Length: 88
Image (tube, rainbow, N blue to C red; front, side):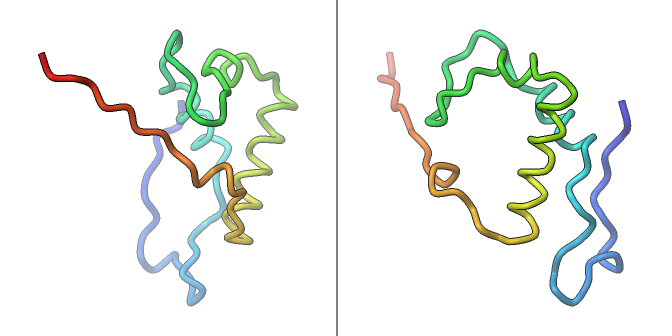
């Protein structure tokens, strides 16, 4: 798999946006997901993302790029759930 590196400050334009989201970045993020764990608030299991075919992954990359460029986050993407565990 391609090694990912942060962009150099000189690569970031005056609009403070660096290079577009790379497909390899999405692949790496999906690869780091742990199977068999509870879904987040999006209710999308890791197994589903890992099982995406080429077309599904390209759609996901397109979605991430669109969010990055427009800075318009879907409301559901800004939600999270915190579960506190009782200390034993």
